Amino acid sequence: FVDTTPHTGGDLKKRAAWSVWASKHLDELRTAKSAALFSRKEGWGNVVEHLLVVNAASVFLAKKIISANHPVNIQLVDTASVLHDIAKRRDKEMGVKRGSEHQFDLTAEILRKAGYSDTVIEAATYSGRVPEIDLDDTEQDKRISSIPIEHLIIAYVDSRVRNTNIVSLEKARDENKQKIPLDANFYDRWYRYYQKVEKQLFSLAEDAFTPSGFSEDNVFKMVQEQSHQTQNLESLSKK
Image (cartoon, rainbow, N blue to C red; front, side, top):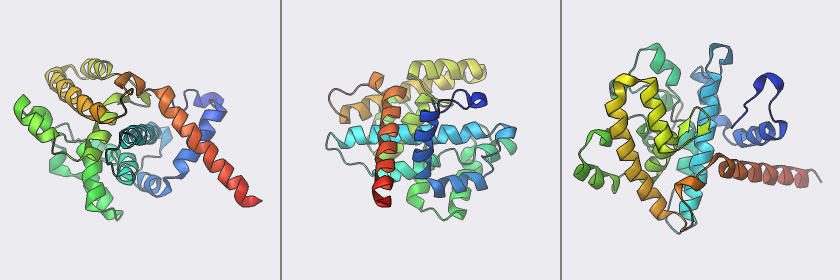
């Protein structure tokens, strides 16, 4: 989705469009660099690509909801989504496992040190916790309606982005269960929770917009349009 053939240079037009998109997030990417996520030789470069895909897809979904006249702080979505996995490397190096993130709070620590507000930190960290997954249906329903929509957007998008590919919730669940068989029961609960979140978010979006329309092609179309607009503005400024 971002660059499937790095050893041959990939799709040059796609790489160019993503480079322009990434240039909007230099501050966030500097934070990612300080968190040692740019070490491609050590296998961490794909995390940065994941951050950018989750970011673009979150902005795409937020725009669909805004266009249906529902308020979303799109700047918050845009910033926090790039930062949601900022502690990925430190989590792994310190042996942080699912369910124990709150004991370490490494994402919040990194973002606080980088000067981000509590509002951004809370939005960025929600997708790594999601305590509502372990609640019963009644409590889940109550909580979903009170969770900030920006948090839900980022967490939902992250649930559907596997590495840099946007997949269905069903496929994400199945691949997670295959990868971590011991957590199969958790991922069944995870799936049921995100089905509710999906229903909530798409009920707020444009009438014709469905989960199947939340696709790599449609998200990249937005990225490409943004790239063209930026390049056109740069050309005009040089005249």
